[in-house]
Image (cartoon, rainbow, N blue to C red; front, top):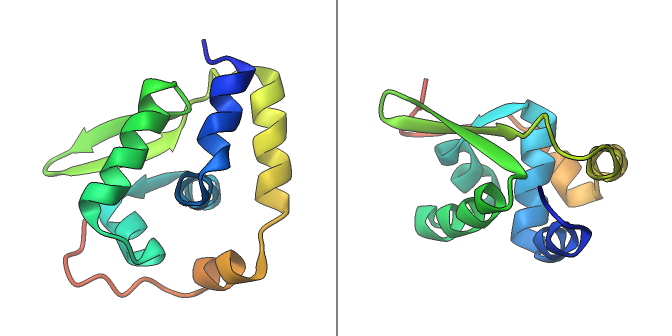
Length: 109
């Protein structure tokens, strides 16, 4: 089970926080969508996803060659409550990104 310190360390990095915001918005998201939305390289996104998985914040599921990420439903109630607050309080930049349709050249569907 994740500790409060580890949970807040996960949230303290802007990239991980943005990943969590996108996961919260979409529920089940592919790494290619994260790289497109955040305009970051796949290795950088994967490194952050690995940390979020290691601490049990995210779960991953392989579908063919793609890996999809979702929020771990067995997170402690306090962690889920914090994520609900984060989900409701999207900053302007992230809200704009979430409203724009994806234009992914290599589709993961």
